[in-house]
Image 1 (tube, rainbow, N blue to C red):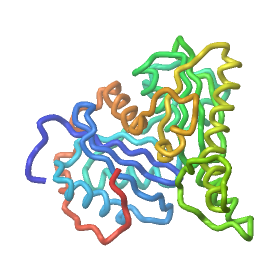
Image 2: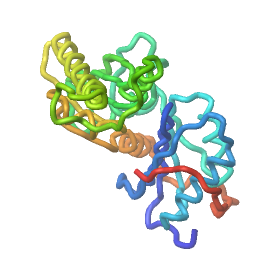
Image 3: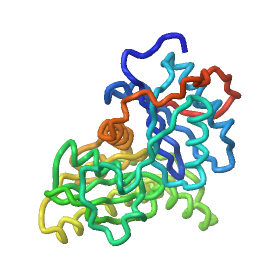
Image 4: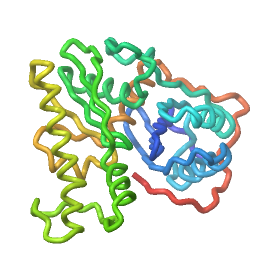
Length: 285
């Protein structure tokens, strides 16, 4: 890259089961975001070529530091290797021992998904507690944070997309339909009936879980939503107060700042990210 950044650039990577979300930050400001499909069989070089091409096409300078949250163990070392090979960066990895700004009241904290921890840290930093964070991903997850900043635990439910896939796979007469929320609950045909069930049905599940969680906590909580299906499902709920589409990436930037990881972690002989990418399917976030 020709121009050096005015400030260190952070590459934040959230590796999920369905998507890998990548963001470039400068001083906690998200400058670029991309969403790639997760493929566990892709190689370091394949992912590296794609990321280098995304950065080049965006006209961004090369990142100088990086942080990763991952719930796909097989891909974590691949991305660590990628960052070292293509950018000369040793990334920070999010764990329950990271500076979350939260105490952990969970029987086995090592089992908590890194993305859930990052979301909780970011939401608590923004709003304080008590909080419930809903993430519409491969699974729909709910995390509870107390008023005094304790991560209490939560709920993991099948995500809306995988529930719909299971329905069409097991029901011979039901085919895949477009993700559109009908104006009426009572469907007049099979497609609209399925669409209501997929979107409004999932929204009702979310409202029900949140109601039960708040009853158990004994208090009204701010409910913050994030994740890929949030724009579709959140408007169908009655319990979500705030939508933060970039909550996980913003949480990664927050943790990188707390780690003091704004220095240049590149080796003096850092390779230049100039590889050209093969054609690949991707969607800019």
